[in-house]
Image 1: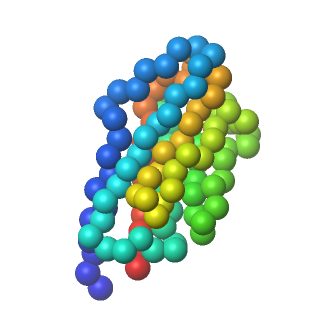
Image 2: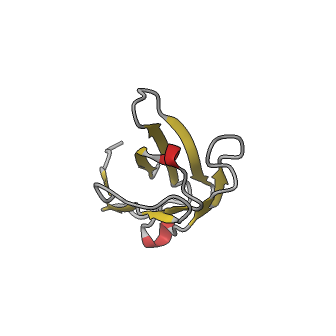
Image 3: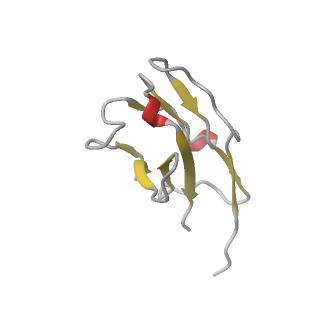
Length: 109
């Protein structure tokens, strides 16, 4: 079966201050309709490290927030896949939150 790309858009840089909150925006576009099986995964790579960890997952219409890592109880789902939005909010920013966040969207047929 043919494959169609999903274009994912995030800001290049996002700034926040310790103790504040920040929205990590993730919008996407596809020429195909948005499937009920759409999945959105956010990964975090701390500054100065090579390893990336999964911190958030949206699948089967439900958000699954990391419940053991550094973002435990500080993350909020702010997206709406029907509006092509996979954004999250991180509350109570800490110095260790500095790094690279990646939004990955899959829209299986």
